[in-house]
Image (cartoon, rainbow, N blue to C red; front, side, top):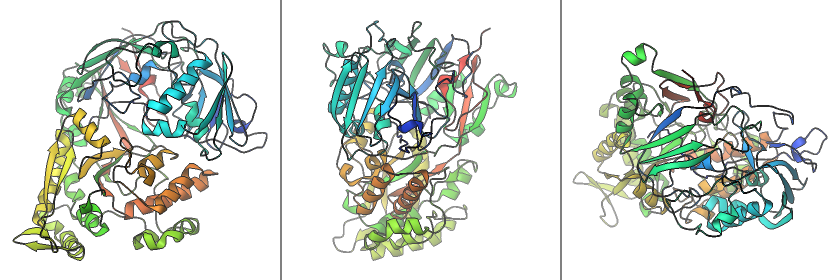
Length: 603
C-alpha cells in the first residue's frame, strides 16, 4: 500500500490538562492561545512559527503525489463515497494541531479559547479576519452550523464526540460557547477544538448529506482548481488566504499547486514516479525501496532517497479476524491461524530483512506493553480475570517465530495449530479440516485491496492449505474495499489501525462493544469485551500521562493475547523519495515528516 497522505476527516485524538495551579495554562478560564496534553503547550503566546518549519520557505512550484484507486466524492465528511485525497487542505479548523508535541492545538479560526475547570463548557473567540474563499466572514453561526451538521451527518466518530455538546450559545458574531455533558471524556474539549468550519451560507442551498463532485466552498489554504473525476484532482494555493501568516501556518502550505494523480495500483504509481510524472512519494514496501529505485538518478543524487525517523506509533497492520463470524469466535482458532503465519520467512524472502514484527497495537512507542503487568495494570485487569485469556496476566505478547527456512521451519508451529484446532472441534478428514460436529469444511475469504497485499498473504494461504484449511484471496478495487470494510462484509481483512502518542476516545471507536455493529466504525474484529470497554473508558478519562500509559498497556495485553488478527510488520521510519525542486526542512518533528512544511526551490 502506498503511504500517500490521504487525510479524511478522522477526528484527531487529543487530551486536555486540568491542573489548577497558576502554571497550568491549558485549564484556565482566561482566554488562552493553545491547549495541550497534561502540560502547558510548548509554544508560548508570542511564538512566531513552529520549530519544524522554515519560516522563510519560498512560495511556488508544484507538489505532485500519487494515490491508488479512485474517488467519487469531494465531501470528506460523509461515510458514503470515496472522497478525493487532500480535501482537508480546503478547510480550516477552529484550532490547529501541531506535530512536535504529543497533543497540542493552537489558534486558527479561533484565536483564543476558554475552558471551564470542570470541563462543563468552553468558549471560542473567533479571529475577526477569518474568511471563506468567497470572502464571506466566518462567524459563530458557521461554527454552530458545522457542529450540528457533522453531528447529524458525519462519520460515526464525529457524531459521537460532537454528541457531548448539549447546548450551543452564540454570544456574538465572534464568540461561541459549547456546553458539555458531564460524561464527556477528558479529551473531548480538544477534539471539539479540531472542528472543521463549514460555510453555513453555502450549504443552505446544497445538500450536505449527498456525495458530490462539485467543489464545495471552503476556507483553507487551498481550493480545488480542477479535477478529472476518479483520476486526478488539483488544488491551488489561495493567494490571499487570510491565515497564511498566523504562527501555526507560517512556513507551511508553500506549493502553489498540489496535484494528486490516481493509479490502478501501487506498481503503476511507482513507475509514474520513476518517470517523474509524480515528484514526491512515500514508499511502504522495503523490497521495492531496495530494488526499484536504483539507477543513474539515484546514484548521482538527483533523485533523493531518505529514511526519515519518527517516534509515533506505527500503523497496526493486521490480517483482522471478523469475530462476528462463528468461525472466528473461538480464541483457539484465532491462535492457530496466528501460528500459521511465517513472518521470518516473509521478511527474509520478500522484504530483505527490512521489517520488524508487530507485537503490539501501538508499535514503535512507549505505549506498547512489555514484560509482566505491573501492580497498577493488574488492578485494572483483575476484575475481568474470568473473561480474559490466562496469557493476559503473564508476559507481554510475543508473536510465533520460525527459523525463516520455509515450510520445514513451520512444522512445530503447525503441530501446535492443529492441536488447538482439534480442541476447538475440528478434525482432519482426507487432508481437509472439517467440523467434527457438522462436517463443514474450514474455509474463509481474505479481503485485500492491492497486488502487493496478495503477495503478503499468499504464503499464509499456502501454509494453511497444508493443515487442511482453504483460504481464498479476494482482491477488490478501492471503492468496493471501502464499502465492504464499512459494512464488515469480510471474513478476514488486511487493514490497519492508526494511533497517536496519546490514545483517547477513538479507542472506543476502534475496540468498544458499542461500535461492534456500527457500520463505518473501526471495530473491524467486532470486539465485545467488558474488559476492553472498561479500559478504553479509562484511557479517554486518564488523569495523567502515567495513568494513560497504565490503561494503554493493560489494553494492549488484552488485545494482543485475544488474537483478534495476525499482527504483521512495521518499519519505524518513513521511506521518502522526491525529485527536485521539492525540498524539505532540516527538522523532522516527533510524528515524522510533514509534507505541508516542504517547498519547491527556485531556479
